[in-house]
Length: 187
Length: 304
Image (cartoon, rainbow over all chains, first blue to last red):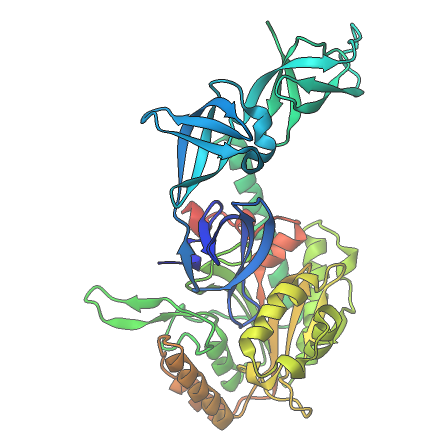
């Protein structure tokens, strides 16, 4: 059994049967009073963020979670299939479970799959992925400095704002934490 | 260690030294004596929500505890005739770790004999602008007078409930205080919160209205100090110690001894006094707008 002294960023606990990950935490102790740990928790099933305050020393249920490195294989209806690179075991997650991350999956992309009580509940893609631009307004040569941007559609369907010099057929580096353009990849 | 971190540590050292020097100057100008009291004490304080470090010698015998504050010994000095005393010392509290807590931290504690809690509130209001100027961190928002509010008013204003409605459930009181009230106290300017419930009086006397003669100042949601119009009645003090021991037993906490010499000195006579305990690391953190007290300490526990 865990307690509040185990709380740190990323600690995973069970609340009413649902796994939550600690996003932020603060020890608070009103003058000469009871100590508490204020936390911000992310629901690992839905991504929703909640605030919860625990009494210092309160017992916590650790969530039975495990992260495994897997390779994305192919879509199957409304789901995506992944394979464990060591055991070759395959499993699938629905597009709904994947959320925005569905836009970072290319054949062979390695992701960390989060398992809760043995069942997959979500993935963490690489921090940066390279994706091809399939559609955008033609670029303006020479305009490499201005802050003006335009929308572009990438090969996975992801929409990002890009600088004016980007053209269809360019490869872009995208930050998967923010879903934003980082740079054009040479070659 | 990267070069930039070295520079930061040296800056912290210089600012801490300047702050300590400014505090000493402030009290010297007001005819206070700087005192020193032991770190190892026979009783670390009986407050139910404070945990102390036990000290043992090489043969495993207990020699005492590290002081959670220098309060008992400083009050014994008042009983011995000292009138204005201050101390800058380390205080030690186990199980306190967070961005505003360290297991050992620097405490400024001062007492005025023949004085009231109002007198030490005034000291506090003058001290903070004084040290801010000395550190070249002018802070117009800390100029006196500071706003005053009772605990009941703070609860009504920030949590929409009266003190009466939560007084019987101490845990709920502290939860509401920690979640809804304290983060909103002193956001623009420091604020002094007075009239604490008698059950949270600790070593404070009671006011004619039945509330504790206790105050706390808050700045940007951080508790800066805790002060009292001091309890001078030895019998009442013993009653509270016994009550705290019962509560500690009920909560399964270690039951520290009663400091009999402190009570004997109270019995012998302590003048009506005002006292205040202020977290020096928190003060420096606030003056510099630092993110944590660890950021203004050369060796917080996590970097030891």
